[in-house]
Image (tube, rainbow, N blue to C red; front, side, top):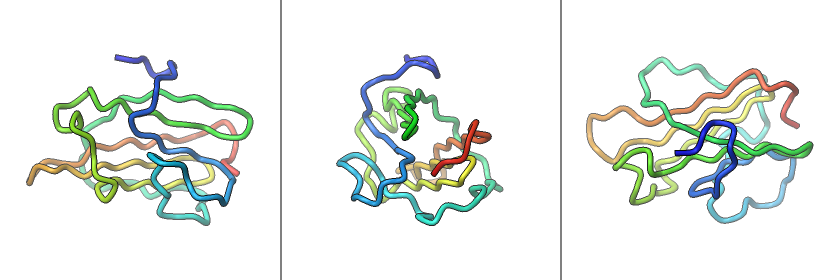
Length: 116
């Protein structure tokens, strides 16, 4: 499994960029296109997602490997994915396909500079 600071080929990718062009295939459009200071804080339990990232001066790409759970291995329908970007953080939720299971979640915060 990749460590948090290794870049890996993206099975699913959420990219924070300042571009208004439509996202490439495999990239989920964020819910809040205007970008709040902070994304919401969750008031429910989530199952932790392991991740890796790649960043340049223009963007940060978050990679979530789907081999970390049997539930994710077959892929995830885009309708089950929710992404929010704030100026200082981001939130990724993947709703479970199994009734009664909490969603997978990843909330990254305190970026060293604002997401433009």
